[in-house]
Image (cartoon, rainbow, N blue to C red; front, side):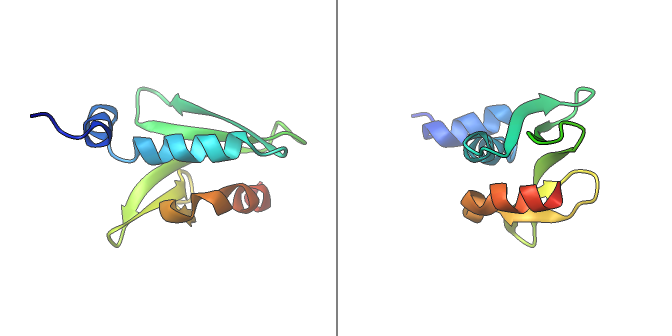
Amino acid sequence: MGEPGDRRLNWMMGPGSLHLAALDAVVAGSDSLACGLVSRGGGPLVLNVVSRADKSRWLDVGCERVGGVWWCVDTVTGEGVVPVVEVERAPGVLVGLL
């Protein structure tokens, strides 16, 4: 028997990718933000988040395990945005960061 679908998909896409897909879905519903999954220089997937009001303001968000908990993090500063279990709060936090 194979692995459950979500486990297998996570294995195929890499650690944290399903969390980024969930973040993408939540941020895409925001009136203030635009986003898309990208790979910079062949690296791991990140979510590029852009302010709709000022397209020069953007940041890349990745997913990392911190102390045993998955977090959405700013890939430049390493600052935690939200734990992935609180992904619905991400748009408000990201607007504040941008």
